[in-house]
Length: 330
Figure 1 (tube, rainbow, N blue to C red):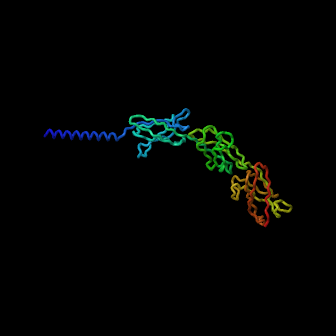
Figure 2: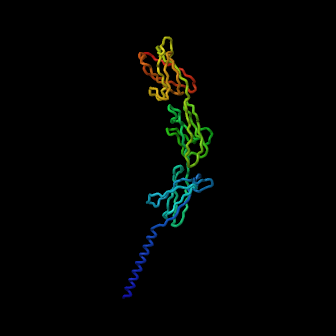
Figure 3: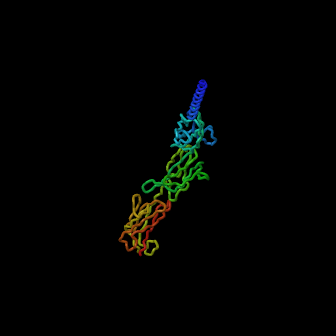
């Protein structure tokens, strides 16, 4: 009987011990080991998912993985000068490793799955598509120096034939300039598609080297309006024919302002002149559509024109231009 009891006790003890061992083994299996992931990030130019001859690995690309499906913490590194990355201490299991743009390297992001085994190294090369960005500005000569030229039409001349062909990238400039994304690699030019009227561009094209995965800023293109001589006569146009007839008074001391910002007064960078005793004035103005603000002295109040504005169109390359400014009495 004692033996039976002792045997039963031993059996229970053994069973309990086996249970503890089984539990211990289950707990141990629930705590995964860690392994290593390494590989490269490469520009998969032909999109076949294999590193082919001529396809380059990319340095400076950000690579990360998450430790688990419910863990939002990212473990991040960057590819080295050879385009390689390495993660140690990665929990065993299936992990997603992602490559994304980082700083100077521009790529379309991609994620690959890799199975990590404890104590072993898994290799995962990440194919991505690198793209180039071309930026630049078109500027114009303004009152206070160079300023943005908004609305200029430019295109990226991918085949360098000097023409805007179908399919070539085009943009209209903003205050920030222009930007071509996913630009073709190589030595290419950005050209002015259409030169605005009454403008002499100092350059209608700029050239640079475009590299996949990189941003390049092209030199500025600059637009300048040529300056022409502007002169004229201010007079009392009694018969309204805009001709200086015999007996029609010539106006002295009338101020003629080349009013670039059309605010009715002369400011820094705007030319102006006063008429002399013969009613004549002489100044300069940029070619194109120009607004002249004419200010008449108060002593000519009987004319009913203390201040008036004339719009003068000056054709490009017209040379000297002489105008008549007639005031018709009330």
